Length: 481
Image (cartoon, rainbow, N blue to C red; front, side, top):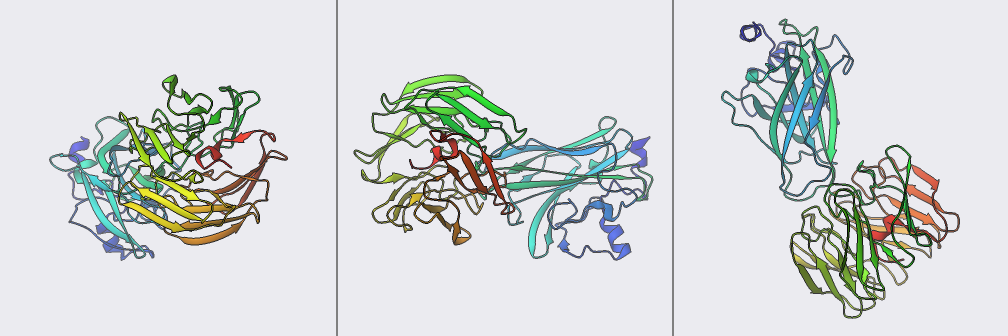
């Protein structure tokens, strides 16, 4: 019986790289030093998920190359975007039809490699999961993994472990999840076992023009002459074409139903009516605004659903229609200010903010701690706020058409300048490569060309998509250009 077999003293208990084996062999990964939070009879030593800077468990189970078998390891339950402090049920599953017992290890880290969030274990008696602390270099990470009591499958060919992951109390940008799984033959040795690795991620709402739901912002335009939306899917390169709107409408894209996919929203300034085509709940339209108002949609109540909102230059007021109920009215700004809404404090709520072109001053009303004022920019600059350093907080940034320069004051990375663009270009900052960082980009109306500098590898991407009169959708998140 398999249950009897796992009680034998020789059994490796599906250890990915058990501590006892490492002790006997005198082996330590060259980039790992760590200690257990408590003794365990079974389970991998920390830092063997195959994540950045880590080994995987073929270090001990070395007969086969990683991911060379017929099985796999999967992480399920990750949302496209997370809220600070959100409790998220996660399941890790190892599959292989001929395995006898199974094990795994997983870690969650931010873009700097630091541990992100915390784990809550189920109340199993005896416990089937444990949490350990380890280090990769000088960076501390947290690991969740099986115990000796958590290796036996409940059905042939597969084993799952479920637990709760709690997101950090503030947005930290993109969070990566890395897992290794062992499908073992239970023969008491390290040979004959298959090691698998996988990864997943959840974002801090950085994909602002993602019509195919793949967590990357897409190149897209609204053609006023036809009232047509064109978007190039980053997932499969297919083009979506949809008629929604009329000449004079202002694109107001956003995730109005909270499913992680960008919805086609329009604001009609002549009537103050919003027209939303939501990906899950269909069409809605309603009056919210007056002639001359500027749409400033954002997630002002922190529920991962975009709220319709307008800035009224005539009296400097902000009107927000909250998805959680009711509306708010805030006086913030003067008639010549440009709206620069964004989550500047990392609490998942859009902050009311303006840029004053005459003085280059930014006035930000942060939802967590109130007023902040910054001097950053000159007359003629265009504000292009976004999360350029990937820390989950919006950065103050400007595009200077006169010189084609971008200036970014990163909340973590500090001030940087980049030459990218020409006088006629329209700024289109967005996360085009899905790394959780806003990329510098421009749309050149004269030839319909997009130029993008990807933050993941600093490579240049250029493509022709649009005509001179098109309105680029990513520009719908920043002040009118």
